Amino acid sequence: MRKISNILFLLLTLFCTALMTACGDPDITEPTTVLSLSDLPGKSIGVLKDSQADLAASVLEDPASDQAPAVVVRYKKLDDAVKDLKKAKLDCVILDSFSAAQYYMENGKLAVLEDAFSWQEYSICLNNSSSWLQEEINRVLALMDEDGTLQRIHEKYADGMPSEEESMEMEVYEGEQVLRVLTGSDRYPYVYTTSEGQLAGIEVDIAREICHRLDYELILEEMDMENIFREVAAGEAEMGIAALSPEMDPTGECIFTDSYSFASQQVLIRNIRK
Image (cartoon, rainbow, N blue to C red):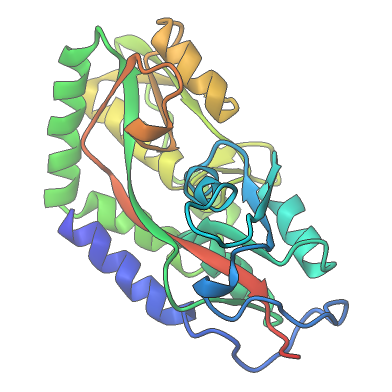
C-alpha cells in the first residue's frame, strides 16, 4: 500500500539516525554494545513474545554461519523489555518501527539503528472458512486506502500518543450483526489501554472503521498472539488484528486479508558510546 509505506518512510526519517545527542533518563549510564546490525550475534536481545520481531530475531539464536548465537529474551510486555535495556540487562530490543519511534521520542538516551532489521506487512487473520469475509474486508481496506482513511489513522499516532478524547473519537457503531475481533495489548501505537481503561490505537481504529462500513457491531478483546490464532482457527472469533502475518500462524489454519500497514523491525539501543 503506497500511502501507508510513504507514511512509515517519513516516520523513519524522524528517528533513524543512531546515537544522537544524549539527554533524558539519568538512570541510563551503561554504554551500548550494539552500533550496527553486524554487532547482533552473541548479544542479548529483547522482543515482544510471538511478535514479528520475535519471529525475525529467532534466526539469530541458531545462526547458519560460525557467528555466536544471540540470546533472545521474550517478554509479554514491551515496556518490560525496554526497562531491562535501560538497566543494561539487555544489549538491545528489536521492535516495530512505530513503537521504536515512540520510545526514542520519549527518551533521548535511547536510539534506533539506522538500518532496519527486517520489513513486514501486517494483515488481518480470519477463519479459513471465511473467504467471503476476507473479500469484504479487502474491499473495505482498498476503499480506506483510496479515500485516505488508512493514512489519516496512521498519521493520528505518528507524532506521539493522542489525547484521551482523540484516542476515543470514533464512536462505537451498533450494527446489525456482531463481529468478535481479537487484538494484542501493550503495542503502542497499534493497540494500548488508555488511562480510562479503554483500548485505543491504529488497529482499534481500523477494526472500528471496518465494522462500521460492513454494518457490524464490534466486540474487541485483548489476547496473546498464540491464542488469537487458535481462537480464530477454531471459529471462536471472526478475526484477529495484532500486527500479524501468515508466517506467524502456528495453526496453519487461518487465511489473511490484504495488508493494512507496512512497517520495519528496528533495533533500539542505549544512546551512550564507550
